[in-house]
Image (tube, rainbow over all chains, first blue to last red; front, side, top):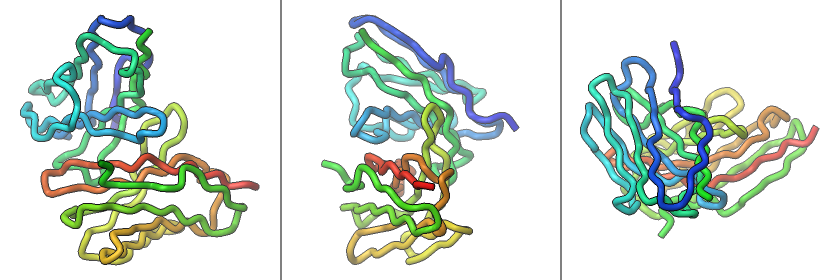
Length: 112
Length: 111
């Protein structure tokens, strides 16, 4: 079965702009989580959506938001981009929670 | 405040020898601990997990040990192979299913 698909793979934006990233989970998976990976920081949890509801949220400012659709596809939005938002954004899907979650290849966002 | 710490940013091991990757945590309420492997330009891949009620879980060449009193877990890879060269992330899951990752350890297995 198809894996977790993230689009786009690469993105370059300028400061102040906003960006929307997309994640299509594995068919049948209801949980989608988003992570930010920066050098030296590892993966930091952004939020998790389960059946269209945000179930968990990490410690990121309100500029970071997300949503999940009825088909479990999820989008993440970052508004008023800052240089420090440059990172690899990963999404992970699982049926119920995080055990054995499958990750997508990520979207590499560069803010200039 | 980092709840999950991987204090070694890198590790180099000879092929065939044992690789030991370490991870420390601060929250005694974590339910599960997981290890992920990440190659460049790919998403992390789940490797192995352990429940907080166990002290060891083995899967082929990979074994995870959990020492709850020390709040420490380790991943042993034996024998190490060049294809194991990657960044390894340790993660802890709490009761709300939130995964908290360490900063990763880059493993290099030398042929």
